[in-house]
Each structure stands twice: as C-alpha cells, then as structure tokens.
Length: 83
Image (cartoon, one colour):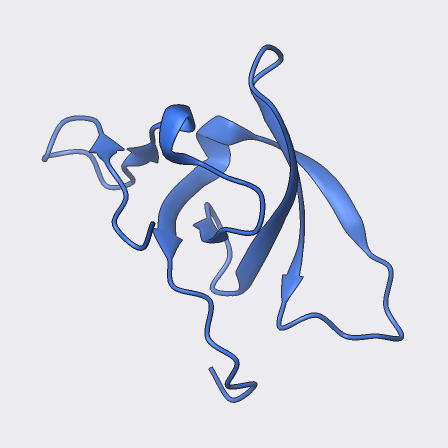
C-alpha cells in the first residue's frame, strides 16, 4: 500500500489523505512537520489515529493522538535512519 489516494482541490497548499487508505503501520507526513511518523492505531469513527516518530527509537515511548485530517501524505517506511 505505498500508493495513497489524496483528496482536496489541486489549488490547496496541503492535501488531506483519505482515511479509508490509512492503515496501522503506515508511514505518514503531518501538517507543520518535516518529520516522518508511523501510524500505530486508528479510530475511523472518531477520525483520529495514534502516531510515533519514525524511525522508532527504542528508548522513546512518545506516541500521540492526531486527527486524521492532519495527515498530508502517506509514504513508504524506509529503514534508513538518515531520512
């Protein structure tokens, strides 16, 4: 599932990812951040997901809830830590 279906007007600065294409384990970009995050949980009914920074640091347990509408792009998860 590397490809993702983006919604929104082409003139919009930030497109929004379609929640039906989002899945646990997906890597995503979010609004106002250049970092990559991994989806670790999804609640489609409440339109939220839980994410953590990717690549995952073993000594860090920082996850947070995020509205799905804050996701701008679904990308391929690279194992390369110099992303």
